[in-house]
Length: 187
Image 1 (cartoon, rainbow, N blue to C red):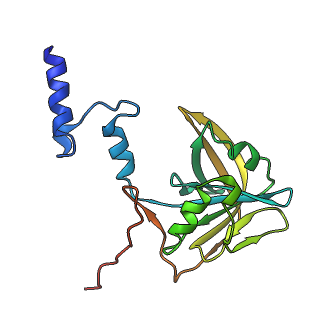
Image 2 (image 1 turned 180 degrees about the horizontal axis):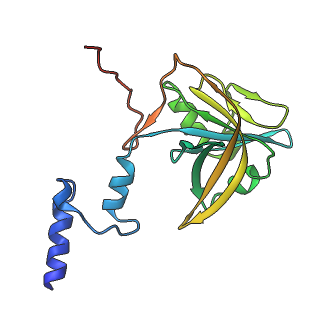
């Protein structure tokens, strides 16, 4: 084993023990998967009505407030997605930032297309945006841009209308689970 391979192996063995244990960022590696999975993220249901049929996907890559003037959000999806090519044809897209207690709805919308919306309480607009009721935030958007980035497409959405429920906490995705957000008590 070369000195470089030994150093690399040592870094890999120590990975997860702080800034002095960085490891190479290799696509698909356990290190990259760990870093991406340990990033706490809100969950967005990106949905629209296409010819009267609900179409949607779930994104944990949602970035709300990508721009404030004009107001824009972004999300990314795999280039291989079979849902995005259909969804992108909608004149308006609804983004529902899911709330605590909607983990089952999240899993269902992320599942097989034929059962994605069965039993989920939805609200559609005349322009075709589709929202999940009881979410934390609702964003009625139109596509502003799409950029291919590696194996994903980053989609920029311009907000047309927005709504929010202050009493609802966000659904958080972390380490493949949906932990409950706990706020510290006021001093």
